[in-house]
Length: 379
Ligand SMILES: Nc1nc2c(ncn2[C@@H]2O[C@H](COP(=O)(O)OP(=O)(O)OP(=O)(O)O)[C@@H](O)[C@H]2O)c(=O)[nH]1
Ligand SMILES: [Mg+2]
Image (cartoon, rainbow, N blue to C red; front, side):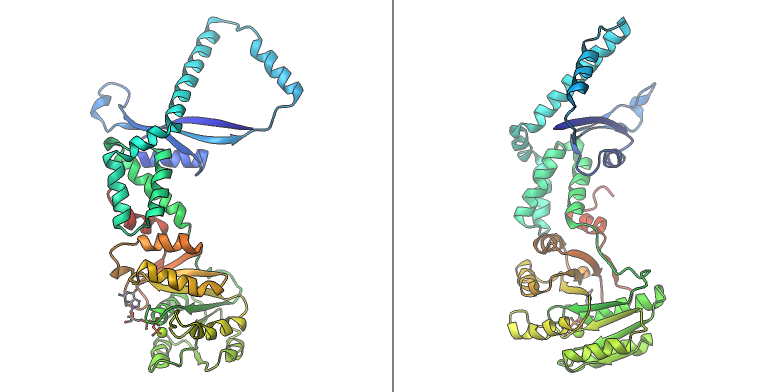
């Protein structure tokens, strides 16, 4: 049996109101209504208005036992004792009527349709599309928003924050390397040519070694491209981190064994053309020899969505990888991060923001990405 719990919140601003709703009712709560209200008291109208928010959540209820039911009915029909109780009862009834009419409004699909014709609705719909969010995902985000809030000019701040919140929920929290964990970590970087695998690996190696005070080692399986080994050797020298070069996937076993006393081992691979099946064979072989690696599929945000989908399809043979997006500094819109996250269902990890080693890397915080997708109007 389900019950609807409806609560009214008053706060200084919509963000605070949303926080109250979220912390008390949880993330599944639906915003039924939100409006600005005058502050109470003398000269209240001169101050910044308060935000009133009505939110609801479906609650699971256990069917009452027969005896409980009887008790309940008896209590219900017991005569009201005094005038105070009667007026309290009337107030409660009026409250319930209000809540019901509010609910009826929200389930009315006409209401959603009229929202779609609204200027603010259109503004945010177009904004998401312009920022590369796929149409089906944009529809989904706007549909969820329509059920949570009403689109109106004076509500724009709430609209913007709600859309950001939904995007954050869809992006899900990033999963990164837990450096406080004692267990040895083996990181493997795979992906197309030239996306920034080696540079990213060097950035992370430097961070683990310098900021996290971990002992780090590098392995490279990229002996194809001229200069690839030298590129990583240069970083290894600058950072004073040992490196091992392997010419055959099987050799990775010995290399990992050699670095058994290291906290973190980072393995670089040659960029592969995902359209050529055989080119991925070596990655497949490599995976067979490594026990529980943390795999990062490195993709550039400058690559088109269609091509990233092709890449994700080609790397489907890897059950569990994390998405690592590079060249965020070169990309004007980050909708594809959301598209690919939803397409693959894999977790985000880090993003890179420039060529500088080790500075230009950060955790893929959903707050920042959602702000880049929606815009920073209300930050
Ligand atoms: N603007 C920008 N450039 C980047 C970023 N990350 C890497 N690059 C540049 O991209 C180019 C290729 O980087 P690599 O690290 O060699 O790429 P890779 O994936 O290892 O390439 P292959 O090993 O040939 O497949 C270099 O010029 C990097 O400086 C980034 O976040 N932003
Ligand atoms: Mg490389």
